Image (tube, helix red, strand yellow):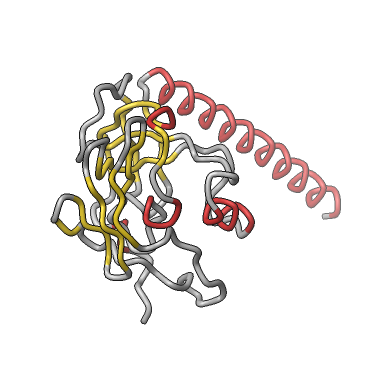
Length: 196
């Protein structure tokens, strides 16, 4: 009886080992395939969660386009430093955002939201607190901003989206590539529920 238990335990360990190897190989294969297809996975609810296809050079930049963005450094604004400190997003992982405004356009930022050339961006109210109300959120100063050459204003429609309303305009050089949804979960940008 004891020998049978030892045999079953060894067999279970053997199958567990091969299952782990299989998962690792599959994960590596999917990663290589996505890289070859120029696909990236977005797990942030700033935009719908899912897979986005990268289309190469974003230039010339246009408002309304989705882009892959290199995260600004913590020296760029206190909100970036705060987000990194509390692990609201991983350091060094590019974001998927929408370009809301390009040089020559005006952005009015208020608690109620951001307006670009007179049009309010949907669901852009500036939040005061994190979803759990554990941390007050640093935001960009309210006011009117006329984007200068080399600047873009980023926007994301999701609840608690972290965009230029919190860290201000970013340099055009932060924009890596244009992006389009390849497969996403509709409505997932609203999964985090807004509080009062």
